[in-house]
Image (tube, rainbow, N blue to C red; front, side, top):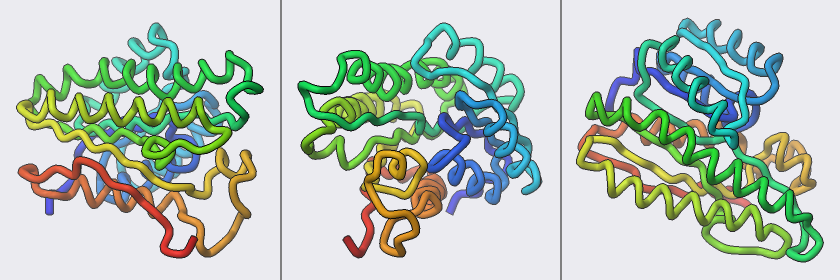
Length: 238
């Protein structure tokens, strides 16, 4: 299994939920971590937790859906870390509502953040990975990107797009020794899913963010000759 110590990672949406759990799991492996989000006080608190594990940590406040903010922010994070080896595209939003009743602005916002945001961040990180001829990109989709369901048309459309974009990129950059992995978790207990009333908090049968983080770490530890192209994470007890 590959040693991840001293690697450099950027995690979008790293202040809460899946992103925070992944950041802490990376830190325990000796990975220096940069997290992004839109609430500075939350990011600062997570950076303190990461640093307590003995690695370097930093953060940037910006909206991944705004390319003019993404460009300088990603550059500053890479400069601060001293490089980048791993990108986790985790930032995303979800609004629930019927196809006709959901305002156009909310539908569009999910595409802008979930798809364009992933594209913007990857576009700024990718040249660094190509230049060093090695790296890992983990793109977070969802089981909603595998199958559509009522009242999540915008979210589902965005996550289907993530899978298509991610698979295309994977085939494009394999020659550069860059692994692109697309994850499609089912419902995990996070602030977002709890806020959408998608589950009852504290159920022993609900997936936790730490389960997701463990999957990411396991994929990264594979020998460089091996790539986890995609994986779905489900609870054993529906």
